[in-house]
Amino acid sequence: MGLLDEDRLFPTEGRARGLARDLYAGIRDLPIVSPHGHTDPRWFAENQPFPDPAQLFVTPDHYVFRMLCSQGVPLTDLGVPRVDGGPTETDGRRIWHLFARHYHLLRGTPSRLWLDHSFQHVFGIDRRLSADTADWYYDRIADCLSRPEFRPRALFDRFNIEVIATTEAATDDLLWHRMIRESDWGGRVVTAYRPDGVVDPEMAGFADNVALLGQQTGFDTATWDGYLDAHRARRAFFRDHGATSSDHGHPTARTEDLPQADAAALFDKALRGDCTPDEADAFRGQMLTEMARMSLEDGLVLQIHPGSRRNHSDPVMAMFGRDKGFDIPGRTDYVTALRPLLNAVGMRPDLTVILFTLDETSYSRELAPLAGVWPCLRLGPPWWFHDSPEGMMRFRQMTTETAGFYNTVGFNDDTRAFCSIPARHDVARRVDCAYLATLIATGRLHRDEAPELAHDLTYGLAKRAYRL
Image (cartoon, rainbow, N blue to C red):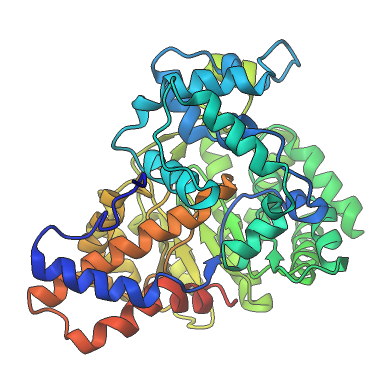
């Protein structure tokens, strides 16, 4: 008996369930287009075996370790490295035993679905993880990881990934992407331009990062014009390494369209470290509009990921650094925040701006009405805390009536957890088929329209939106 119900996430009502099954059968084996994520390009460049089951499934996955942390499990016991190099658990088997003893904490969560999918479909496991099966699991997965068919490139091919985008800082040298391109492997791994470190005055090392940007490009980044030219040069460098998008993880969705003299004065304050919090937010907002204008020049799709209140725990930030599970969603305004950018360039159909949110209350009130009228806007899929079956269904229910399907961009997995990619896409495919089946059963969609729409939601929309 497998770990997964074959009809998981489909409607319980008989006719709708049958419709969902039929639609899913038509799209379940389509290639995976993963246009935004955080897998490590080094995996595919070097193609070395993954170290052990704990390093694959536990230590790098903030979805997993934040849940265990919430129940009092120390991050050091899960192998999460400290910024000061202090002691932390390094024995993979001990980490795995601790994980297995607490696996019940993930019941009902999307992480449980993703993990069970990975265990069953990637490693051929048909029994539940628990304290009693922990050693069996560990040995089984470790044995698999020692084989050539479980190395990153082989799994990439086995997962039927057509293209995957990683995300690199604006100053990254893209060494691993060059190695992939120069290898004899045919997998398509592209980068995405993430300039947060050189557009956020509140980020540690901002001025030094801007100086490095100048060294890399030969432009004088102590001046506003030189700084913008340096961005153009780095974006071109990223495009040469396959990038089709930029990505912006700002605290808010604020945009500005200041006179260039005012923008230059604000930039000077940012370099000196003299910005107030409001001025720093204004500078980030100005840079979103500048990046949108650059997108009109070079064709990169612009993604905005606002609304995360980063590093909520000061002690965890001090001991473990960024991205350790303590980023929390917050209320986010879009209508007022985006107006300067939209009034500047929003009517251009050759610009694509993809909006994400961690604030579900904005779906029907702000995001869907905005995307339902501005030609440049598209809605990204449910993200982070909402990339769950319920979150995906709420997204469709709250946005379709105003934005339709074709102002959305399909699914992207946005993950560092490589083995969960097929699982995440499978969940999205099942939920979309369930939603379409409900529309058919309630007379809101013709049966003969649904297969084409399911194909678009699974494959076509992402390819088109991200220009892949």
